[in-house]
Each structure stands twice: as C-alpha cells, then as structure tokens.
Length: 115
Image (cartoon, rainbow, N blue to C red; front, side, top):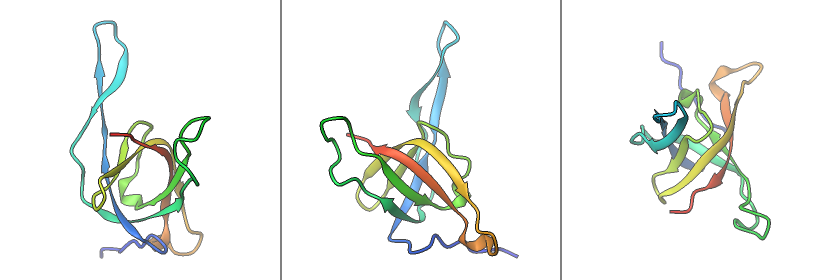
C-alpha cells in the first residue's frame, strides 16, 4: 500500500540536485557539480529572509521539503522548477509527526544560489 505524503500547506514544488563529489590527486573530496534534478514534489517556503544579500551576507532560507528526498546533505541543491531558483543546502533535518507519518517533512536551511 502506497502512502501519500503531504507537506503541510504546500505552496510550491521542489526538486533536488545531489552534489557530485569528486576526489582530487591529493585525496581531497569536494562537491564539484550537481546531478540532474529529480522529480518535483510538493514543498513550501517556511522562512524567507526580508532581504537576501544584506550587508553581512545572504539571508538564510528555511524550506519544507518532501521526506522522500531524504537524505539531503550540505551542498545539495533544492530547485524550484517553476522559477528556476536554487538553494544550496546548509542543513537538513527530518521532522517526524508524532501521530501521522503522512505529514512528516524535511526542514532544509540554505542560501539562495546566485546564478
């Protein structure tokens, strides 16, 4: 039986581009590129900074992402296909509902990627 997931009050769709990790000649691992975006899933913008790019650095965004995208790691991208906006993931945390797993979600914090 398939269980549908619903990000509460979804107002957009998000897709994820996983960071491609490479190892250089010195054994250093780095995220050098991103894989193609996966399918778009319901999501929401939880916190939008008043002004992105203020004097002390870009504002932090919080996004509600479908838990089917777990695990998300730092440097992965969350993409909003309808606008082309992309956020670089800083942290991702599973938020499990105590009673109904269909309203679980991922709280993702990141910064808007300037393209």
